[in-house]
Length: 219
Ligand code: SF4
Image (spheres, rainbow, N blue to C red):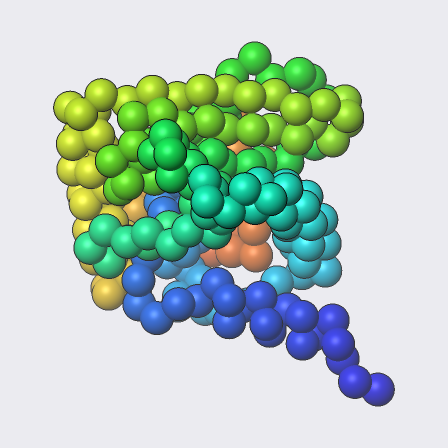
């Protein structure tokens, strides 16, 4: 029997791994996981495939709706700064604004965006010279949308680009040295540490923490 689910996973992997560049999400999610995945690639689980497809389905419909106005909007706009790449969900050409769409299964109404989502759009804004960005959350449990605007001054964008270069440099060094301990993990971040429970490198990461915690400090 052909393994079509396996083909889907393989296709996703091909979509994700684009040469040696670093994705903005590698910096805003877990840089340490990125290093592990380079050293020891593992195929995504069924659950990860499901989450990806269901989240992407909402994205695709929203993007199609924006593209009713093709003179104004571009979707899936690829951007690059040095060896760091990103993909903007929706780019408003008229206003030079960036819109990032997220789906959330949160049981609570969000009062502010998650830090790692905000950081991602800040990087995109800095890379694109945008003064305004918006994060749109599709709240699956509530059947509604929440919109959070983000504003950045020229100075803030310059600082953000410096941070991007610094973080990407650290990650690249860790990848080159095949040493996950050289970059931070997310296990102490209450907003995002739930991802560790699904991480295929959890045991290895715990071993790194136990033996090399001083390498990256108390991160
Ligand atoms: S266990 Fe958590 S901190 Fe460690 S690599 Fe995986 S996602 Fe990152």
